[in-house]
Image (cartoon, rainbow, N blue to C red; front, side, top):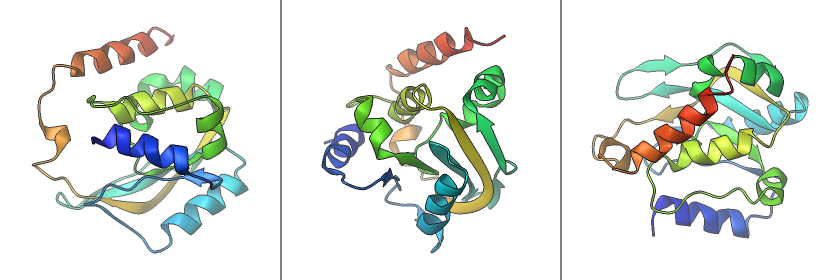
Length: 166
């Protein structure tokens, strides 16, 4: 079973208000869940994205605290590809995922990007926090380091989105 199938099984069985994903080799701050839940409620948005530390490179990746209405997000989409890349530094609303039948492609490279495209297309706004709550370990043996011919399809989808750009 690949990551997409496992994640879809988790979504189907989920009963909570929010969903979060953590890669098995990564780590999170003790306050990760509490901080993210607090922010999604306080800011009244459909998605919260936190900063993260690249553990192996000792580099923090973060953007300033900012509430982003979806119209502004699409207007500045060239600068916002950051938000499509991964699922692990985000908190999602389960209701939006289930009501819009958003799932992960199975056995496909780029499933995080495709999931985020579908999710972000279904929301009204998001909040970015500069808090670095997630610790990403760059594993040289991970699936993301292997070449897949399907990568072209992901690039094609991103190219379609770029047509929306001014």
